[in-house]
Image (cartoon, rainbow, N blue to C red; front, side, top):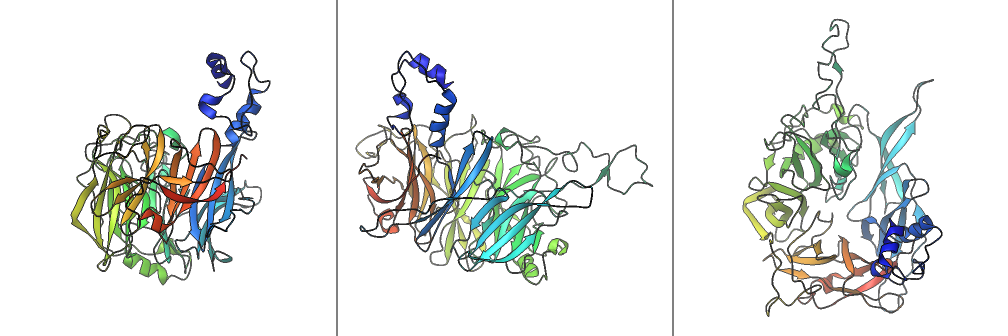
Amino acid sequence: MLKGFLQTSGATRVTSMLGDDASVLTEVNQNAMPKDDAKMFNKIYSACVNLQDASVSNGILSVTRSVRDIDIGKTRNYLYTIPIPRGHGFFPFSIPPSEMHHQIKARIPSPSGERLLILREETAESMENSPERTRLVFEIWTKAAECLTKRVVIPETLHGEVINQPDGFGAPSWSDDESAMVYCARQNRPEVVSYFDNLDNSKGGEQGSQRNLDYSAMGRLGDKCTKISALLNLYLLHIRTGAVTKIENTPNGEKGKVTDGGYVFGQASFSPCGSQVVYTAWDSGGGGEMPRQLGMVQSYNRPSKLYASPVKKLLLAMSQSSGSRSALIPSSKDAAFICLSDSCRLSRSPRFSKAKKGKAKLCFLASQAGFDTHNGSVSLYTIDWDVKSGKPILSTTRCLVKSCVDPIKRNEENTVHVANMCFPGLYVFELPKRCCSSDFIYATTQWGSVEKVVRISLDDGTVSLVNVDIIRSSGQSTESLASQQLLGVDLDGGAIIMESAPNRPAIVGYVTSSALRRPNVSRKVEGTLVAEMGPI
């Protein structure tokens, strides 16, 4: 494909798409082709930067970089630990990254940085002459994530694969007091028997359900989620006791059906009070609008709503458990779940702001009518959450930022623009896990052909472009058409920004909370260079 592009373009250099960086690109004569297209592609591809799980604690940024190894056809993960520069006399440097073991499937730092949860998929030997099997283990690290305190082996009878997909079904999430975690995982399939089996001699099970997605057949979600089961439920992990159990007061009930009248769960997070879990439920027949399993990545038009399930009594029971065998904990007597976004056809990505005067705000993306195509401009909704009572105030639901059909026209009132385009509306796939302060919410949105970071006031919904200028080590400033992506907001209200351009690898910068609170952030906000990511 690259060879064909060069032949048809007739360019002396691959500059129209990739720029002039000599460390990454190779000169190509107009009538001559590179001898090794694969080598050239590998050079260019190695400059791509994919970062996730960014967190800041005690002035140290930790972030995971995923790199695709073309030679072996696998993804390799590297952990970066980078000091954030403080003051003008601080020269940016970074400790060499360390490759994460292939058994590590998720690495989730707590909000304070004092704890760390690591999900491992270990290979365990079974009985003699039997094939090896894998098991899931949660490792809980404490004391600034330096001490391994507990290992929790997940019983095979409880659930299957744990989902770690921040840009899709979500990742394990900490409670504010860091005493528990909520996550979604694949529901186990119960035993089934054929219609033709003799039930007297069988071991029991659901008769004739081999092709029923509710029981035995493994439904898939399509698109890029072909390896993710359509049977997903919510589970809690208690940090001190290591107890693990399923949340049963959900729209699926105790039986856990997710087709022919059920839902697929994901994107779960704790409320600020810690007594409820808020999550997204995609319709798989339970809402009457989606009787079949459809894709989840390329198309965002699948009906979904937000729900909240009280878990206070269940957490209390887990805290009194003596071990991780809490799959046997009786069903909690917590109140029933409630729907938080009944008026919207599409709702996803619930996030909480910091509490202010005893109230926090639940922010989420939504669309009342859905999209005519796979995706489109979304609205941003908020609901006040009373921290003391631990309940949402549904009467305060409001649309903070409306969806935009056509980009706002440029005039005397709307002077902020990117590539001669004013604010086009929110084209946001998912909100970052940590994106809120007490007054603002930050998000990455598609703005024409680039990505930009915007700041949205939680009071009046004012949208402001955050124009971050990160001075690189070469002395060059941010290009006007460079893409910037929000990786997260730390406890102090500062933001971690990744900046990329077609002609160079990405860089990472840090913007202080005081700079982000300025009224004129669209003009220029100084960002501190944290790291310049080189090719791998």
